[in-house]
Image 1 (cartoon, helix red, strand yellow):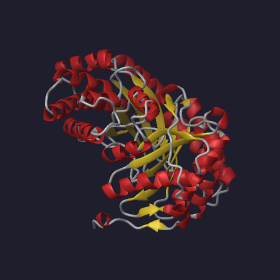
Image 2 (cartoon, rainbow, N blue to C red):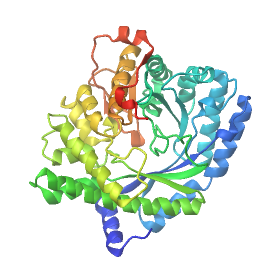
Image 3 (cartoon, helix red, strand yellow):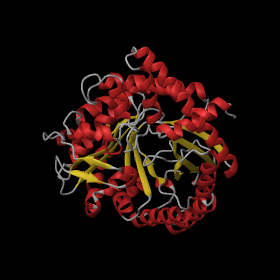
Image 4 (cartoon, rainbow, N blue to C red):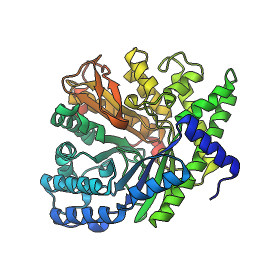
Length: 453
């Protein structure tokens, strides 16, 4: 793939003036042949595999970024879901495995390693139940390990037994890291319809249908889209959509060029380009700002869902035209803690948890980096997860919840996580209880649209 001179100039301009960057280059690794009945053997083999395969990832991304002039912000690793790698595990086996992944990530210089995960939308094995027992401690005792649990799919329905369990796991993980603003919860995503080629943390894992290794690139350009909209002030929404499509096309072309070159240098295949508008706390690098430039006085008011639907659809259309390998999640993220305009809207009371839930029905991915009061019951957290899973199941899309009950914090407080995770105002939740619903357990059956065979 080659860029024309005009595309090269446009790309450099986007980097200089509109915060364009490659948000992450993620190396996916298949660990299935590391499976073994002995947990110590699995931990050793997994650590060795990650070190051997990923040792060149950070140096190659640094060289490529310098040569092309495009920032590559994060180099990361995602592995096969670990829940079934150990034949007859104990909780300590999974904690040992988490530490092995964490140590390997530190040695190769990546900031996060994803895939401490399980796919539980239809049921659980004994090993997977042991994995769930170990999950809060594994996240609390490691710094770079990220986990995800898929609790629902359009084909299988919603596993409410695991949804209820995840509410308790989130609460326990928060308590174990109360000294650090419940940071373990920021490394845990609960999915519906999870995809195995998502390069973005904390939900990245290397799916079972993926090759032995692959480079998946996540490129982010809210600033590029926002700047493009400056040129169509007052135009109708059809023109707005076309402008966003063109910006997404340019972003995608630049991202695939970098991804394919990195895969060539690493000697592994190119997987997908995930065109997700992932914001940062930089001025001008906000999804919320894009929505306000469309004509909203403040994100969260009536009309926000429609504006976000337009944005998400236009981004996907522009990306799909630019590349045949757009995958992952690809859309617009709305993480509260990482978007300056979203943070302001929450703090001012314009953006509520209920409105965010409605907006997730039309975007990628779901309720992301939401800080809530530390005394929120586990059943309420499980109910929030269930609602978001229902949106994903019914709409045949990926949805997720990354929610953080921060011990000692209440509505009106601000939680500072640091780095790319940013900061978040604590949002109110409904006080009425959903405990009776969660206690029923069982499985919410797949919807009719799930019967597609």
